[in-house]
Image 1 (cartoon, helix red, strand yellow):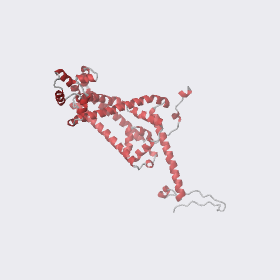
Image 2: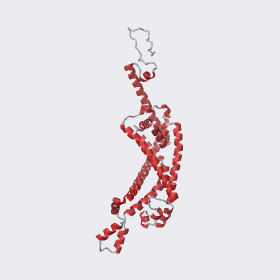
Image 3: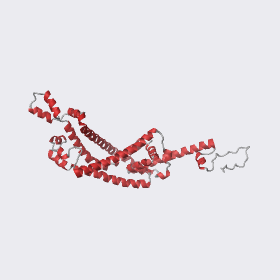
Image 4: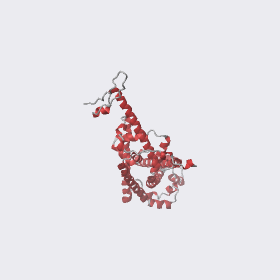
Length: 360
């Protein structure tokens, strides 16, 4: 019973906080090609995020001010009783929902900007504190330092690497659950609407157009009027494939592919968040405390290991330089006193110690 109620082991460890003021970032610079490619990804991701927010802003203005949608307005889509059946709703319920879709969609965009403002305010405090672990766990502060210099990015990669599997799981859970407010209040309402619009697009692609009706009529000249009407209204997946591959409907293809890609990415985001929520339960039993504090503790511990490793490497390098050249590179560049290895006197040597040699 005492083991279950005792303090977690990581809480008893003395790990100091680390700040950028006490780290020589140039020691962690990498000169390989893959590092340059990885660093360019920071610019691409940041640029993509800016474009997404600009697109959301323009979409909100178009919907709220002009009631303009990328496809048909939801109130027109709601008139399709077949679509409401596809979604498992009655036409009246779907109609009521469609009349308020633009406010739901615009409201979710506004919420995303409010969350961005709150995150930015918190990130400014983290940047001002120059705390490394907080900067590592904050997306805006992390990108700020990475965009500021290549050395910051290389240092963060060193911190990220060589973690134990349990530490990587803790970081995965933390970063996935960190965005739960954005996922629920900013993304989910929009993607529900995206699913409805995508269902409408697929519904339209799965219905025969005039060309399909003529081809079917020529292939079935003896078909009755009821059979023709049945063919006109039945949804067919083979027609979806035919219409998507049609070169004459590029705009429709682009809309379907874009909405499908965005919705699939959202589904993966939801699934990964659910996995993180499930893993969080046994992880909480291990850390017995705040997850963010635990992740920051791991990062500070990792930074301490990196700094000690660099210090040992620096001392070994200085010892090699002393053995080979009688001085260190740093001393030679600064013009300071030249360090020497100690002279051990033997029986034939003079007992008087030799004075240290100094530069004129």
